Amino acid sequence: MGALRVGFTGGGGITETHARAVRECADLEVVAFCGTNAEKTAALAEEYGARHFSRLDDMLRAVPLDLVVIGSPSGLHAAQGLEAVARGLHVLVEKPIDVTTERADALIDAAEKADLRLGVLFQDRLEPAFVRLKTAVDEGALGRPVLASARVKWHRPPEYYSDSRWRGTLALDGGAALINQGIHTVDLLLWLLGPVAEVRALTATAVHAIEGEDVALGLLEFESGAVATLEATTAAWPGYPRRVEITGTEGTVTVEGDAVVAADLRTPRPDLITTAEGPVSGASSPTLATATPHRRVLEDFAHAIREHRSPACDGREGRRSLALVEALYAAARAAGPERT
Image (cartoon, rainbow, N blue to C red):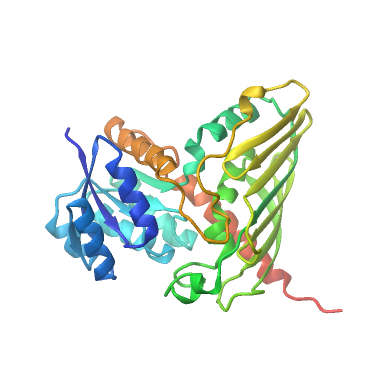
């Protein structure tokens, strides 16, 4: 089998990141882009020597492809994935898999019935620092997990939302700070600590003129008995690195940004400590993740196709974070405002 031929949906910054990662992979080939912004997709096509289309079905009919990488607005992910699956193509979706579990389930079921690979871009799962941390947690280095706290206190200026037709909308973003910025950390908590049994939540739209929330607070009780707090906001000027602390009966590990910065354990594990690389994604001038984490995901996905196995984060795993976000939103709506 030669290089796998890749088509892309979307013309924004995340699609540029996807395409850059594909170009770095020896066994993947950039073939075509589609998106509603003709200027952006044409520019990407020119840069990568590819074709460009305004409609997904036109791209799928006109260009031989092996897989589609979906970087369009979140509320379009499942629908576009279903179109690709119907053409017999593998699908890799930017997080979240969609904005409702109902639509996510339709895509998951279709891919499984067609025996096609479906993956979700949660690059934390292939970050070497977090792979080592996952191994340590599974081996019991922290003992029994007891308490965790996760903070995603980022800043997005007003134009981040006002200049976009989809960010912060319920139809295409599904919300805002929690489902968009916070969902990587939601996935990290689930991956490290397992399923959540119960949630409580509060949300608010405090600063931005958007339909979704720019402040979210969750209380999580895991099936293991561990409890956690989760904060997600795009209203914290000037923006801070993501921070996660996990405490077990044998000590505490601290994540800052994309690095494990402390491991205070009864039995020392110096191999867990790393240093952050690349830009801080929570800074006040938002920057995309560097290409390297996405390259890991693309390479793993290509191997999953060739080896006929599940990718690092398949559709069912990618659904878990969306389901938890849905539960948090439902809990926040049920709580409602209480005045004294």
